[in-house]
Length: 434
Image (cartoon, rainbow, N blue to C red):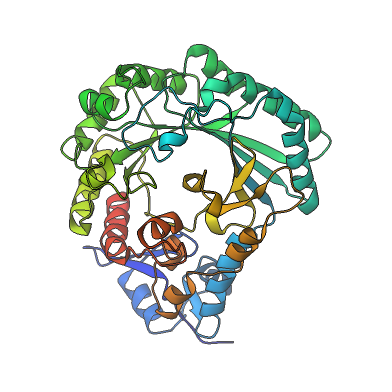
């Protein structure tokens, strides 16, 4: 039998009682060992372990042979890239929106009323999905309704689901639905629709306490949105919908992100998943030094770490679900079986690339993707990270391709966040399990 050792792709937390917590960045498994057990494994000894226990440690990514570890990591990325069981898409019926967010990356593309999916397009769209699903025999189909604001088109959502379910009724494919919405239109009637189609996740962004949020995410006429969104989220929870709340982080709300959690608790939000998301540059704002994004991005790693630690500590204090780890990829950009269907029929590998025709990977009206899609699929920007031995590469894959594109003009350049992972992975592990 090949000599086994602890994997290089492990984050270790040495606890005060002498035990050691291990987190596999490949499998995301967590293991607690006594000091003696850890000492034996670190020295390469499996003495005292049964064959079943050794197999379990190998399967969960903690024990590896030196000869196979690099191949296992490459296999990990191949599984992600070529995962043959699930086809995952975003669909944006239009870019119309009822909000005027100060950092919106869709910018001047919004409200293009002459360019949108309508009821007459639906048969062709459903045929595209049916052809894709049938061609590779997928077992799962995941649809995320996107925009603009998707709840401006509840008639299209209902029609799309009705026709898709009818066309796939004779197959055994599992279809799930998610939605990314600003939350303002989550009325009782719309919540009933989402419940009816068995929506598994509703994602909403809230950007600080009422005054700050209302300045950053107002209605088109400048009106406030915070109070109605929070009331709607409570209604969603009461209806049994799973909530994912994104809190965009920038210089305008750094002093109130923890107070926001208290506001959620007072409002009656019981168990949403909440995460912090630093704003970043957009196509339309990056060349304007006075734009909101250019002026308010929190760029210091030490400051990002400090703010994230404070936020997730408060998350634990208020009893909300805690993440085990943070991640920056791999994203849908490099998943062979993932794309966005845009309002004008174009296909993209990233939601933030929508509208940049240089990054378009095809049209749903065509029988195949274009050459740019296959160019993306032939590239592995994480190879350099693997060669350098970075243990975070399964959680990052070289970083955000779109941010690299905005910073350098080349989506293949690494957007490394190793210093951030060094701090935050260990912190989150200890926060959750201590």
